[in-house]
Length: 330
Ligand code: TYM
Image (cartoon, rainbow, N blue to C red; front, top):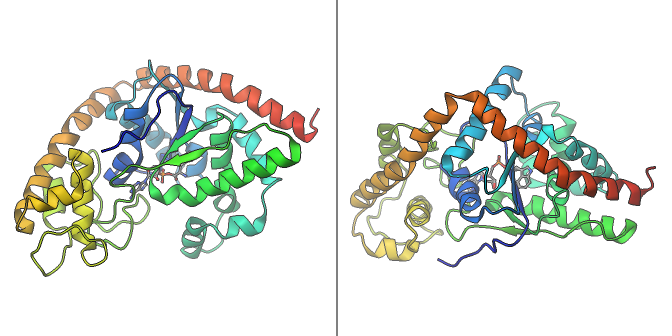
């Protein structure tokens, strides 16, 4: 597998605290964050983004702490990188407003995720429409060069680049134009029951998502029941074998070999599923164990976050002020 991160680069990425982390989040994003962490890497729990859909305040509070604990358990080291909470750094919301004033309704209403989520509810929140601008603010405030994300964020990344270029052309060179970085395997982990749909925190069939904190028996059950096809030929082929190819990508991401090499080792689905279950259980068990230790001490989690919030604000503040001044705010 190629090394895709240059650890001397400024990195920013974020995750919504809108539910338990699943292996799509882990393999598509968080595992790359852990591998690429360095003093120039900033990772945030984007609690403001979670407000774009209905969420109970008490649930948001709990899930924000859960999310920080999951990231630490997955291997983020606050001595190495900066881990913070989006709403604790007010420049995110402030820059988002400035960027809304250089974005158009047309480009935001064309975002696929907006259309999908808006279609599912009546009277959606305006924040659902403007969400990608807040995401652009998250990225641009840190002058991020690289943004490690899953495949589903490509369009938002493109919007960020467009908005940044438009701003720079109109008001002067304030923002760095970021690049999205996607993992070689598992950049889009699909639902195990409906492999045409991505694994998701918001919509998921009961056996469709594997959560990082799932019990071993649940993981085994979900993998054994994963939808494949009626042939019994192990081949990596998204066109004709999406369910199996999804399992092979998950395998590849946990193990490090290519999906084709893994496919060549098996002659039937049963053995592949059984080995994959063992691999996933073994890979996730230490994370779940560490999570339970960390989660029992919310004070320690808060201390990590407070330190991260301060470091983040020191970087974001000057960029915000330069952007505001460039637009004419005195
Ligand atoms: P979120 O919270 O939905 O997901 C967090 C990260 O997990 C990735 N991901 C997946 N990767 C592979 N397969 C999947 N099925 C899968 N589902 C989710 C996402 O691509 C993401 O990297 N808008 C973002 C959060 C955000 C952000 C940012 C990201 C806000 N500001 C700035 C980067 C930079 C989101 O909702 O991710």
